[in-house]
Length: 365
Image (cartoon, rainbow, N blue to C red; front, side):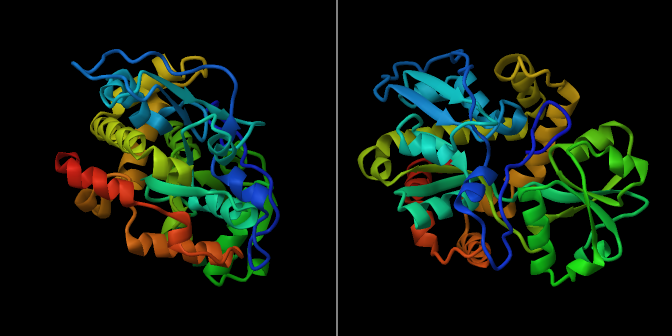
């Protein structure tokens, strides 16, 4: 995700989305930066009593650097849930600028599971024939937003009219254009101001709104004492999910027990993360992302924000974490069609493993 802090870098380049459609490379990049060489996850602190490590090492390609965004995976590793599920070791591979996408890592066999999104998976499946499927999604909503200071209070698409909005070049600009398009806002009535990833222009009054993330710049502004208002993309026409688990169709067919074991352990980890944002922050700051210079206040804020705004919803409360309702899948397919990718839910999603997991482990709900 974008940031002027150490948490995130700029989103990745693409061409315009609306009507013309995204380029395949840009859509893949949108889902998260690629694997960054270096740190693997610390060894889990415990093992399950009597559990046989039958599945070998679990390699998970994260979509970004090791901040609180992946708190559930940290809990699953550090509390031994992955080992309890049958994995002998865990390698949480950090994402970062300049490397291969999660799709590439999974297709190459360098990762068993990757974190991506329908917006990243669809073009690879449709344009390249990649045998990939999404088997669940941590984020039920994406974190993109226009942030404004409370004095301007941009909270609805029509509030953008007549305003100067700071938008970064590349995919951020593409997404902003899409926001205007789906809400039938005449782009000529909004002044788009080129900015970088530091929201200082917002504080200076150079712009009245700023392309940001609910889990990043918004928190940084608020921690700096600035009252903000937000216009979330997910609630205003662009409801695509994120941090989705992508795997190969071959794995679904031939390594179903391993995938179900991964899901069970990761669900347990995220249940812990949802109940303990302070520990989520500590794991990010002191253990998994200790070399990133993260701060406890920011990471705790991110954990709280993603827990309440992006992960836990009435649907997941009823059906379980990572589940994606038919309605939400259909909405994501509609967005993909707007982008020029005419596909179906069956071509992108396979939630049968989650169905089995919850049928076999009803206590996980």
